[in-house]
Image (cartoon, rainbow, N blue to C red; front, side, top):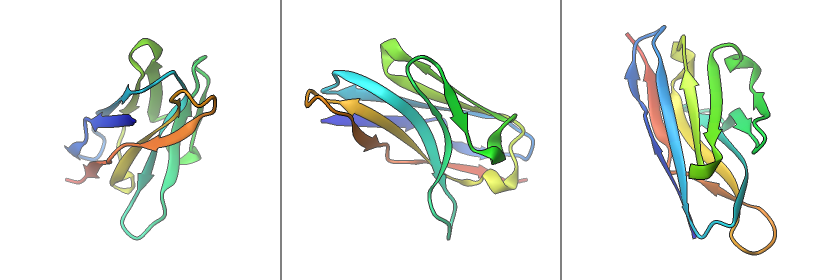
Length: 120
């Protein structure tokens, strides 16, 4: 029904930057919140940042000041600009979107995940 395709992960040195993108496609009537979660080895998946259609955002305390989430509503795409990366930011990053596929309510969809590794 709905596919979320992520891109932009990779290996970066501490203090470096990366930009993740996630495009939603398929049987989409409307998209509510979009965002990013991450899961480090041996840890639970955690919220990184979310954004709703009017541009209001929410961030985990650990990324405030370093990460910026944005979206292009016309393209159903969400971005995550990550600056001043630290080794503890190493994780698989997952895109999430709340999508109405014609049922009248929003369902959760997830991307396949993209690896971000911060290491010298």
